[in-house]
Amino acid sequence: MKRVWVLTAVVVVLLAAATAGALLAWPDGALAGSPSGLAQLSLPGFAGKVESVQVTDPSGKAVPVELRDGTIVPRIRITPGQRLTVRASIQRPGWIGWLVGHSVERTTTVVAPAAHIRSTLLSPKDGSVVTVRFAEPVSRVAVGHRGKRIWGGATAVSLGVVASGQASAGTTTVAAAPRPWEKLPAPVRVSWFVAGAPMRVVSEPASGGRLLPHGAVTLTFAQPVSEVLGSRLPQLVPAARGRWEQVDPHTLSFQPTGFGFGLGGTQRLRLPGQVLSWKVPPGSTLRLQQLLGRLGYLPVRWIPAGGDSPSNPVAETDAAVSPPSGSFTWRYPQVPVSLRTLWKPGHWNVVTQGAVMRFEDVHGMSTDGVAGPQVWRALLRDDLTGRRYDRGYSYVFVHETIPQSMSLWVSGRVTVTSPGNTGIASAPTAPGTWPVFEHIPVGTMSGTNPDGSHYHDPGIRWISYFHGGDALHEFPRASFGTPQSLGCVELPEAAAAQIWPYTPIGTLVTIES
Image (cartoon, rainbow, N blue to C red; front, side, top):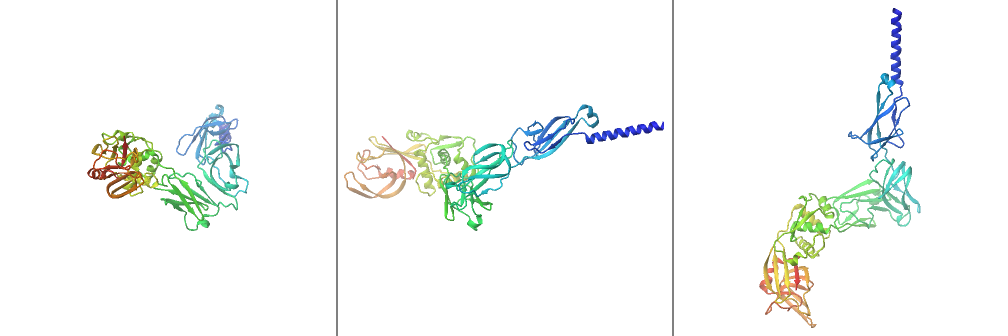
């Protein structure tokens, strides 16, 4: 009986040892790095079969993948350098599952490979192809805006430039990914200088090109920045708010702040012995009209579709280039037909020109009617601060049919109507619509008569010049209502004095038959 118990104990021990051995030695499969995929799943013949493969990002979000001959390949683009968790569930054969377990899970963490450029400052030989080199093979590359797939991978990629002539120095951006299933990362700036070439600094964007209002300006020097500039910084003309940052020993970058570089202007940058320049795109005519309408300089008002206004300088500048949607409505009733026909949203017209001149005059600028950088900056600032023009809108229209007359329309109604005199046949008043460009209470008017003689009339009152030497003004005549002037619109003194306060610079004057 004792021998039976001993034999039973031995059998139990042997079975326990066999079970332990099976648990320790049975092939389970393994996860490891892959030269082409995200990971490699090795599965020996007796290990069983793959039940599932799951890949998740750090937030726990699932990343779709597929298994190709043991290689785990993402089905979407992965960002280089992204850390991912890979889990593989393996189902063991049923005949061994009772002993070693029906399934096993293998987990590993992988990092999507990233490309590393060996040098971002290149020194190619004159006449050679400019080439960027990587520390490891890459499968996808974008040079500037040109992307391409590199089958089989490569550690050296041509930038598509021969280093000679005007291309003896230059800069571009390069983005590369080691695997074809990876996203291209943020581009890296690469610059080159041929030894002895006269050009010793390159910029992005290139000098002479286009510069966005809030676009960064990056300068790369052939020598270290400290050797070229010392403790000084490049000078921006006109000055612009922003900050300079030294990216690396050879590279400086300027990021504008506030309203950025002046819309529609030329931005220059002075360096020792060299000046770089760029054109800044202008704001759109539609946005110009939107702002002038909202600020009260037009006979129309503008209402944004969303009801919201830009709340900071960057948003204001962005809206100037890409106008938001909205609608225009007439601000006043009984708008003269001649004024209505002049207004065209989204198109430059004399109504817009007059409003710009009025805005310039209010802000103490030169009244040229051109929406340049200074006008745009003031417009954007007024819109942010809510500075409105509240003096109404006035418009003058002159009828040349006899009896000739002048009418003043102010904010919805005709307030003054008076007989007037326009130009004689040999010196007619130019037909059309013109903005007042000079507004003086008294002055001397002189010129040449049609017969060649000269006139010199001092003490003329209430003058508003609107086209060349043509003006609204008082003039002592025995009668009014017929052509008698040399191009001007002559008015009785009382009427001229009454309308003069309502014809500041920018006021439109229409001469019609």
